[in-house]
Length: 396
Ligand code: PLP
Image: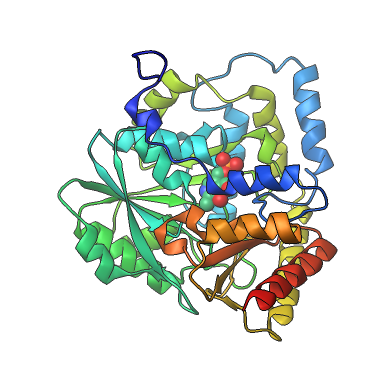
């Protein structure tokens, strides 16, 4: 407060600060800390993408563009979605956004009124909840089953759905668990959503980051359900170039909507964004339309780091791999003992110079867990994991 006045809206005040950011800030202030908390690729942005950005700017593509996005980029997006995701879409179904987070925000604003509820995964990426809070809507966490067959717990969903529920969010492969839903699991949860008349928002940020067998995306599973004359919900898919193309700082993504929702999302974008940076969209066209070697290189690096970490975890008993890591670039580890994960993560930084994301940052069900990012250099990962295991072993 300033004097007698409260500063800021109650919606803004209700946004919980990021528990990952708090550990990162501490890690940056603590010399010699090995950083395993980061959610961003360790690979550089591909040079042909950087060149395309510079060339677009030099050629004068530096002005406002259309709200839905630069046509050449939307064409490249539609071609990628057909090629990679197997969905039959056209550029008319695509709206460009400033990274997945902004696309999710626009989708939420298009779907949610104040007081509406939205089902979000717990554990899950924190913004899936806080983006609802800024709309005055209410995020309701639903538990994710762990182990070898990760997926939403349908019995719990039955208990959590109310007349105010508008939508269900799925994120597979998942941040933070690295777990991926099989087609069967997705079909079951999509059928459940359809029977309850809910929209499905698919956070496809890691759609190309399957480390073993790629699984179909939610919109494709919905299409297959419809073809089989089964109940299927409307699906909004939010994609990002951040992780797949090592473009986190470019802030670029795209939303693929069913036709009825497209003008609504674009209306929201018109008032909140005007348009995404135009040179960035030309860089995006190069990323999606050009050579794709970097994508497999990153997958191969994450796969080998995952396998090495799983091997390293075999000889100890203080950390347990909670979910089979099928994609994205995270390991989700549970530890024994009552210590809150936020305290443990702080202790690991200050006393052992290793930073991990505390599980509680991803929701109440994340308590008792730590998340390790595989997007860290090989030697950093091996030594970091050794420090964590040694530290927890000493305390056991
Ligand atoms: N969704 C998930 C699950 C994420 O982990 C992230 C980033 O960490 C995003 C969306 C958003 O990424 P961006 O806004 O960079 O596209």
